[in-house]
Image (tube, rainbow, N blue to C red; front, side):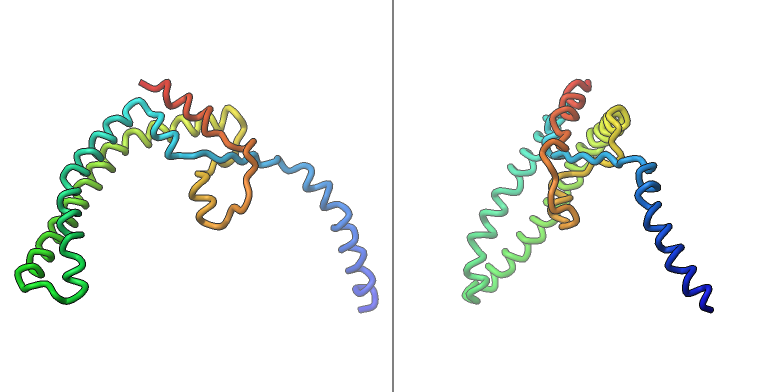
Length: 165
């Protein structure tokens, strides 16, 4: 037992002394950040997404205005039965239209984001990045508290994306 008591501190000491040497042999993970919204907007076909969003706004805005006009009466409890029914009908129509336009936007974005993902992977491999994070997501998650601006790869990735046809 006494031998074990003397052996454990020696082993721990050796482990602590050699751990920096072991750590030096590990590759350094290169991490980058980018503004994915800016990169998506740099895509040549992003205009198609904008067109979908403009069409959605044209359809949804009048419904929003009508809902906003009825909202105070509904909240105050002074709306007539017809106004309450109109509000419910309009709210349901607005929700359905919003879902329809969200699906169309996602459908328009899908091929663009796939192409961008390929470009990000090529860039990361060529530049030796192990990880590239979205700046907004990383910040909002609270997992990344600081990222030096020198790690921002938005501009070079956006240039690659702009060059797509």
